[in-house]
Amino acid sequence: MWLCSVLVFFATAALGDRCARSSARTTPPARAGGRVDRQLKLDEPVITRYFQWLGGLFTGNLGESVANGLPVGSLVGDRIVNSAVLVLVSALVMIPVAFGIALVSANFRGKRTDSVIQIIMITAAGLPEFVVGILLVALFSTTLLHVLPAVTIAGGGAHRGPNRPR
Image 1 (cartoon, rainbow, N blue to C red):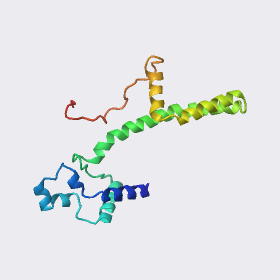
Image 2: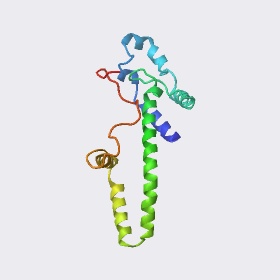
Image 3: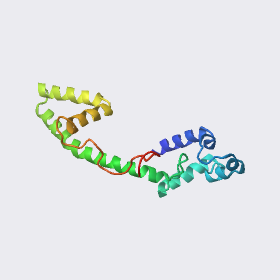
Image 4: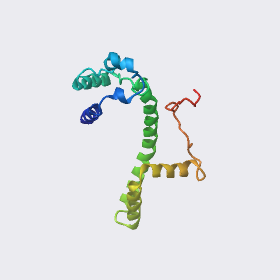
């Protein structure tokens, strides 16, 4: 993960001046006076900026979004909660299902049932996640079973654009 952070940070820094690409706070007077460069710490060496960013990451300060000026932690926080709920629910469902399938397959090892289970599992592993997700929603949430809701469980994380109510 550390190597990935180094590669992404330095690849992003190699893209050039992000003030020139962003219209958020880059009015010509602000650029001319160097205020934006000082605020974004672009006047410091790249290695110094990386270690400041890494230190902020360990202290919980993820910085500020260049695109909209909001704290990155608040932008990511709701989405992390939704992802954690999805991981927990899927683990609670899939771990017992996987053990059950493994027990049946082991009980009928080398027989037709084992071969059918292996073919189904290999086919399922080869399908993209979005296809499996759509099929599972269709199975559990729509016309077939009506067991689970087809909408989100955890609140927050929704994008509130200019046309959406708060």
